[in-house]
Image (cartoon, rainbow, N blue to C red; front, side, top):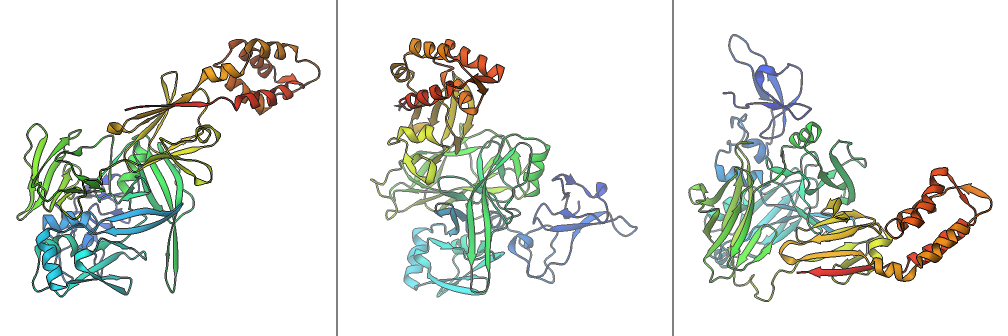
Length: 529
């Protein structure tokens, strides 16, 4: 078999050498660089080949099409490949101000033994980005703000008396910089981690992407909404990018092509890893237990045939499962979810376990921050919401926990979303499902409306409207929608005018009057826990 098994064409389709054409550009599925087709001859079989690449990045050095000469040695270790496909040290896109994003590298926590050694030695870390260098203390380095669009950011340690395997595994590959053509980030409250290369993108889940362009592609089955901007400023140059919220609404040839060209697989559901016992603090991928808790129990919620591994002394070790529940030590264990049927490098780091007395605070239990954002980017929590915000403007659901909103119309789901809700109509019920943290429901209090509107009186007013006729305007359509669930008689009179395209002039005054009464219609709130 050829080193590069297949290429990806411009439509995101796998093309094998026997179906390829000379002169066309293909993308390598392993390093996402351009490859070209070499035709069959009496000395060779048809195959794909890279052009010469100087100063290769770690992703390029682990590609099967790279032979390791005359440049640096080829990367073959499974653990090294796993950390590299996850971007080395994980990148996190976060909303520092409303609509303003920044990129941070989140350093994984180290074991107690390693931290003690680094403190004793006074070890330092040099972060080298785009020709500049920053020095940090190695024992308490938590995060680093990325300052440029550098392709790769290098990490070097100093004052180290000898090599530590844990440092080599977690830090030595540095940080894979941003790549707008490839990168996809999870979308949680105010940002999310970058998705590992060759991993799964799930239909219906919201993600964030970085784009150089102010306009988004028009793809059937996908939506793109502007979220904000990302800027890098240096002494000599400035780079600005656009951040978009991306949702794949259906799996079709166009959406599959778009996702596969970026190096990912589009699926409708994915396996999950759920901590069961003992209690822990969850921060992104990291789960922190008490120092006295040596063993953790986790649940593998299977939806596909994905495999679980942990990083051990002998490389990637499969995790034995019994009834989908597995136990694993809490001190410095990295758990990966793999799907080799899609890609032989598919290894996404899902969970990093640690036990740290310093990080675990018993009173610091997790409570989700759930709320709505309305006009002027005002945020209100779900338990202290001003009812007027819900129906006066378009709103977004914001949360640092995975929640989902539904708009119901007489038990019919008209919309489901993890973020964008829009303007709620008076005949819609809003339900926010926060899983184990409760279900929150908001709906119109029709009794309140009926208390404010005398139906027989309004019916008589409409019947007496006469005089010169004028074209029907938008206000009457809004009134029709408002009255539909209240009175079929009122609805029928207005509907007849709309059908004819004309209405009495004095109806305009009535519409303004009914709008004032409509303001008394209030949402009622109830919370079921």
